[in-house]
Amino acid sequence: MTTNTSTAPPGPPVQTGVGVIVPYDMALDRELWRWTPDDVALFFTRTPFSPMPVTVEMAEHVSDSAAVSRCTRDLITVSPAVYAYGCTSGSFVRGVRGERQLVEAMRAAGAPAAVTTSGALLAALKQLAAVRVAIATPYDPDVTERLGLFLREAGVDVVGSSHLGLSADIWKVPYARTAELVAQADHAEADAIVISCTNLPTYDVIAPLEARLGKPVISANQATMWAALRAIGRRATGPGQRLLGDH
Image (tube, rainbow, N blue to C red; front, side, top):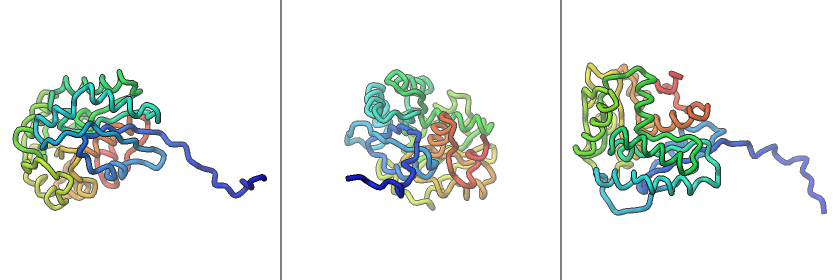
């Protein structure tokens, strides 16, 4: 018996893979896909579950280098061209050195290239020539303070700050509340505003906030995808978002 293949579609198309390592409570996989071009596939894996609220202790738990190494190896079979550690607090909680150690852990475990969310935020600020920022976070005061310390250690001046004080269910925060949070954080001296946390939805508010405030607004997920895709010669998709227009 022969099969007629004359009407078969030409695909499947060749796709480049991005390995994404996220904390066990990540709920915004779909948002990351929105920045992803059609010729790129995202392969997700999660750190081991632990029933912890979003605190400094949780950030330290999900950024354990051994766990991140295991997560990296979990995706080796599908051959991602780059890996992204998609957690802001986990990549800033141990300072600049801790962020670099996460990159080194992924590379040592087999990643051909690697970025972290907090490293991506620094790269995005450099791309936009922003040296003074306001920060908007869903965290409690202690975690928010760690973000400020990380940025200052990296040479970025924090001139404004606001936070929601949440320790759970961050992915449920509505856009309107996030917009209020950003407005509260903004400062006349800020060159840009950083919205922290990869579990806080931001895709649809970035461009409107930039138009309203007259300055770049960089979110954790946006920066993560921008940096990961840039590392493999691709461009993130986000209409009207300043970072994505400044390559």
